Image (tube, rainbow, N blue to C red):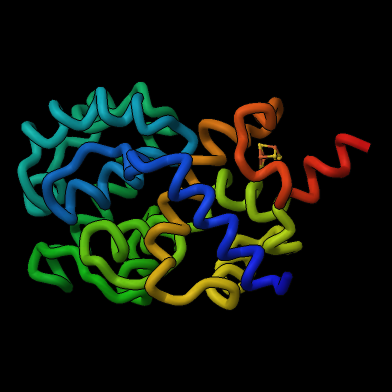
Length: 212
Ligand code: SF4
């Protein structure tokens, strides 16, 4: 079996195992997705979803967030952790959106990653989920799964992204992003992977190594 064939079988298995896998952050607009993704760093989507309704009600657009009172903003996002830095980034990010993008969220990678608090992972989420553009989101879950399945031997998310892009056709990238994150989060967990509930055992070198 070639690497591409094995990669294809892995994706097919994940598609079958997780038909309901989705981005778990709640949002209605590209700006809300951008804000929620920034807040999700070092936090959980569930925690972010508890915070964002009040946040989005208080600040309806980039203009409002750009002009937010820092202390009030910090209080609203406090429970997501690193709240001072995140508040600073959100304000600065929205100020740039107002100054350079008419208050809209850009869709191109260089413009997105130039925003404070926005790395390549966040940019890929916004591009793929809000705008339907091709890209593979490599977060900690996707990285772990890619390594255990030996789809990539790299540690750097950008290099893993490149390896996955080589293995999968562009039409599959959205599914790879969604399903690798989901499977890593709920099944192939960092400390205690639930191999007994995983359909990938026969395709997983990590599992084979543990079983010897
Ligand atoms: S078999 Fe275990 S280690 Fe391999 S992908 Fe599944 S959960 Fe992860």
